[in-house]
Every structure is written in C-alpha cells, then in structure tokens.
Amino acid sequence: MPRVTKGAARTQARKRILRAARGYYGVNHLHPYRAYYAVVRAGCYAYRDRRTRKRDMRALWITRITAACKMRDTRYSRFINGLKMAGILLNRKMLSQIAIEDPKVFDELVQLAEQHTRALAKKAA
Image 1 (cartoon, rainbow, N blue to C red):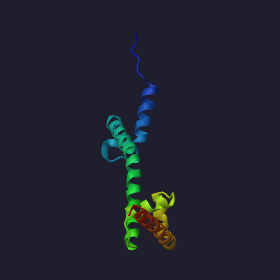
Image 2: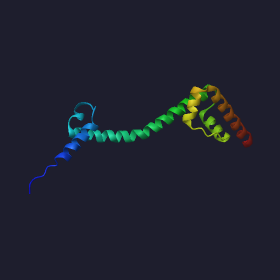
Image 3: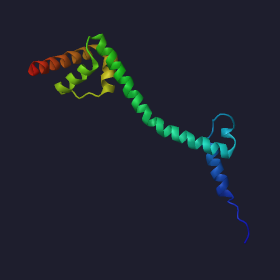
Image 4: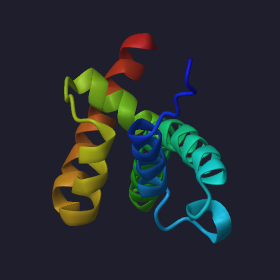
C-alpha cells in the first residue's frame, strides 16, 4: 500500500489555524504548532471572559447607583428595597443611566423609595 499524506486537508487546517492566530505576538502567529495552542488558549479566555464581563458591568452599575444614593443621603440597599416595594421594576443598568443622565428623575425615584421604606417601618412598629 502506498503511503498517503493528508495533502490539501492538512494545508487547509494549517491555514485555518494561522488565520485565527493572525496578530498574535512573537512566534505564536508563525508556527502552526504554537499557533494552535495559542488559539485554543485564547478561546478558553474568550469563553471565560464573556461571562466575567457581565459580572463586571453589573458591579459598575451598582457602584454608580451607590454613589448617586450617597449624594442623596440614602443607602443602596434601602433604595433598591424601596423600589421593589413601590413596584418599580427597573434593572440596575437603567437605574445607573438615569442617575447619570437625568438626576431629577433619580431624585424622584429616591423619594419614592424612601416613602415606601418608611411605610414598611411604620407597619412593623
């Protein structure tokens, strides 16, 4: 039996890997073996960090809301709890946008949250 090399399939696979590794530093974009491991590792980081980015953004929004609440002499936890009791279903992204772009509306939201928090405190007492 004659020896069969992969031929075109092997060349295509090598090209695909090197194309994916374009722009990588040093030898990682030149040699197929190193490029393969660099591409695999990059894929792992990309998968992991797509989830991490969501956490980071939520933390950023919460930090912004907390800062806006402190400027209005209230706490983040009381503000969020008051909004829930008031039946206002705004996510943290929208709340942070409102705090930045429209402070008057955020002031009204804080007042509304405080009213509902006080109402709950009176019921409990």
